Length: 269
Image 1 (cartoon, one colour):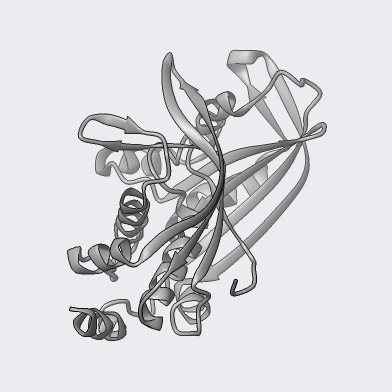
Image 2 (spheres, helix red, strand yellow):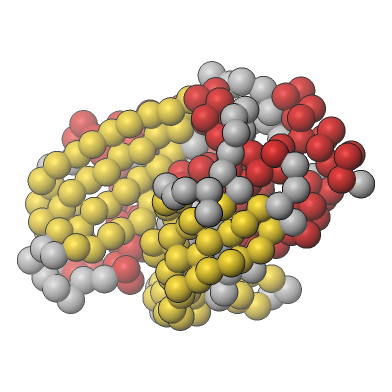
């Protein structure tokens, strides 16, 4: 079984092809004079985002059900950092570009609050770059992951608000495939082996809730360390998934502000 998994991973070169598509990231620094604001206003920022994109593109997203972007908020001192990620070139052009070129402030109409834009920073990365950096290289078997914003999963009709490795890997694989028109990374066998050969070795977590349009979603935030055992191909696959997760988010409602994650650089121990 293990030899077969190694073969599957290495022959992913035939499946995960180099694409012309790209990943986008826009960071918007906002002045925040209201210390009462927190993660629960994330859905309002989703509304601001939707107002900035073209009507035809918004209709297409609604019809297809796809969300080729994620967004979340971070709060520090008197600043809010609004991060928007896109997973396709079209989404970058339709979602990031209008915010980058046209937005001077953020108007939260429901709160009667206007937040001044202080700085914008944009970056892009091709799928080829991501694969070369995180899959076709000697990956670190230790992954130090921070869940920046409230994170949760849905399983068998119930919320799961702790870091279940099966749900994490499954979510990341599905998000990759949903945004990659010419690529496929998911297989039951790959998922099974990732679960069997992964352990959470350290954690510092807290439970929290995420409010969304009258719904209270139990969730968690914090930091975990995952050790990946097995062949280097499996280690590389896990590195690729979490690197992609920095763009896609993980779990439910990542387009509304949940599931933001960051992979922290660390040594091999």
